[in-house]
Length: 204
Image (cartoon, rainbow, N blue to C red; front, side, top):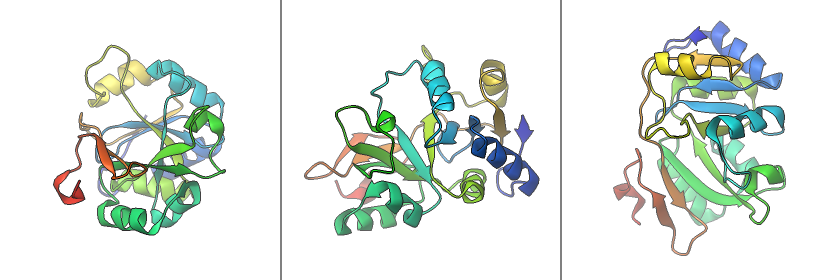
């Protein structure tokens, strides 16, 4: 458990969590929406643990969380219109559904799909962790089976996850509202889930 400052995270703690991810670990991290579970894109073992923690089906559509748009562009197919939408609303509490590139393992996009959710977090802790790791990470909201809301209190995170993850970056109480999800592959684009991100500026 690493208690990190939410606005000015301690570099040594970010490095500790980053090394954990680079070594194949599973990390709890705050974002501007909810706490999330993070692991490397190519890592199978932490991915299996996420499936167990969340009780998710194997064809669940996962989200990649990126440090910036240039990093996002490596993993998703972005046209001119999509880029304008992304640039206007990221970083922020939005997840956009886009076409996945071949850098994304099939287990993350599902057997019959070539799509992936992508987001860029504005939270300083998450941002600095992503910058240290140097690549996008698989992100899943910390929401347990049978729970109506994601875990937000540090005490709940510790109680339910301390033996199931490798590292926890704790930065105070988190939100319980997830990101707004927008499908940019639909014609026209459509909001799939109304969450923390304001849908008004999307113009949909």
